[in-house]
Image (cartoon, rainbow, N blue to C red; front, side):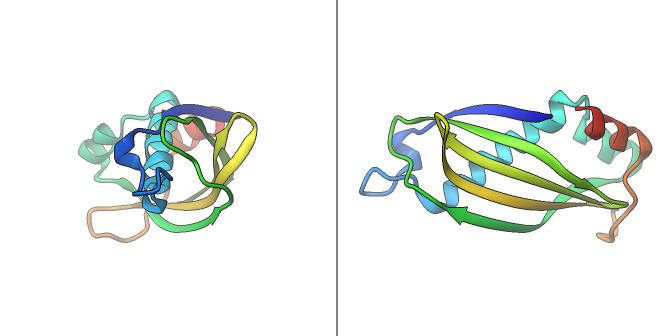
Length: 131
């Protein structure tokens, strides 16, 4: 299932030419991932408080395809690609209408308080698989 998250490009998101500054695409996809997890019923603060686990970005492979502009209404899509023992792989895209502006493959890892990889809890796995 693909999650959709709307984003409006504000002046603060752009460079001097009115084009979305490259680092802001990472902010857009981060917000979309946070909402995807939230809508799957996962409370990340509770996960940390109860089990000492957090989900962190390990790797992002990004392609900047077309420039998004000031005042564009964009949609960030998030789809689960792979669910491993401690790893989550997502495909994300930023679209203007049906036109892809930016795509990314994102690898997330569940880690414990010591910063080492930790197995995804069963409840988290079920939520992500169904969400």
